[in-house]
Image (cartoon, rainbow, N blue to C red; front, side, top):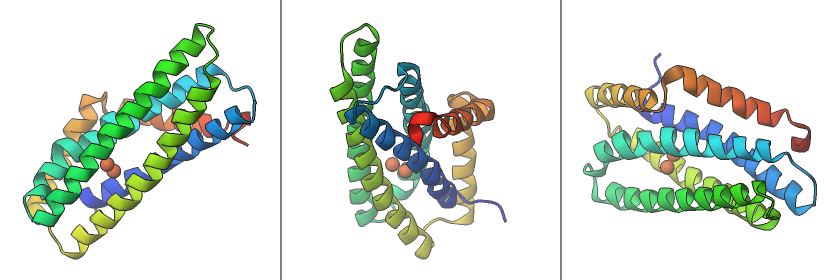
Length: 186
Ligand SMILES: [Fe+2]
Ligand SMILES: [Fe+2]
């Protein structure tokens, strides 16, 4: 059976949590004084920015949430909170990146980079748990019609194209695997 839009977002969360685990481990090792190639941390920033923020949050913000918000007042309240959390995550990711760039110019930014990575990991755990509960509820209530669901899947495709299409998404998945294989991840 084809994957519906709600299930697709839940499946994205599995990948999003893999990025969370990488960010957490990276933070732990930095705090422990271990050296991690700054190039690797730059890749962490890339997958955070492209997979989580542009691609996954893009699908939620541009397609799924607008479609489901007006179905129920409780839904729209939840969605309003999710959007605020996306904004928070975006700010944390930007702060991490800004400090990483400073570090690359020779200023020691180990502490702030470690701190923002840790904050980001906590944000992902909290945010995806809440959204999963929300998605479960929508599934249980059968809130989306088959036609709305097809429409959402089409819209998701456009979101994928916006970030460079399936080739870029596959590339991002390869980058996540690459990071998981690095020595400092062990
Ligand atoms: Fe979200
Ligand atoms: Fe999400």
